[in-house]
Image (cartoon, rainbow, N blue to C red; front, side):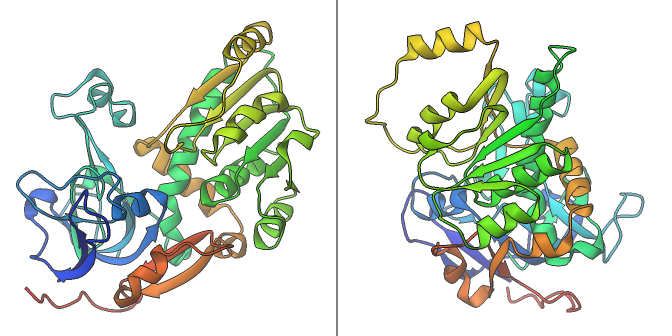
Length: 359
């Protein structure tokens, strides 16, 4: 079968190659891949910045934003041929740590976890993959290829889960205003979740208009571009999705008393910008504010993501997909162009049978 493989740590080593059929050790459920989403994590791995192959393997199969159709499944496992599923990315610490032991592997405290397509475990970027029933999540057929949005939406669902838990510190907590910085796929999905919570929605992005602006307006939100410093918003909740240090610094000026600020964007490299940490500390203490970072997701977050996407307008979700390319042209999906939101690699049509083995 065909798969997108690379040598971790070696930039531009990825290619579509023949690989053996998936190992039964990966799980008893056999899945035919329909589509694979591409994100910044994939681009970093392809650039050699990080990523690791399974123990004893030279190459890693790429891909963690999955969508597939079940081909074979053991009786009584909860899945049947034809079911649409997405695969959870992280696998728990084998010891396990206290968090992993209760199914919160997204909060693993030892960092001995593995991740499909990222760390120590092959990804979903192959014509077929196997998976354990515990780590497969069924999605409604009606979502079609939009089901590939479940994985990024699960990251957002976790952020909202933590925001809700932190907000419960006070019985008077009644957030009204949400500011999302960054209108990439994570930022727009964060905005969707905020709109579903009927918050006064504001989204800031450096792109002056176009599709991103239209998507925010369709949610009933206000779209801002230009200078974040000039933004006249005092937000109860801020979700930062850019990873840009200047934005992370400036967002604090737009936080209300008792605000919760959640970081989802991952900064790269060192910052040349300095910040008055003492002033930040005084502000956060005197205004009862919280700053929290979050990454990854557990099963409950995937299920919350499926529920949120299922009740979202399908035409709105469809506009998040800016490019679909076949496996033979997968590099076109990786290339980030101005205005891109989410690009997909299409492996198979919805009504095609399982691909014949070529190994």
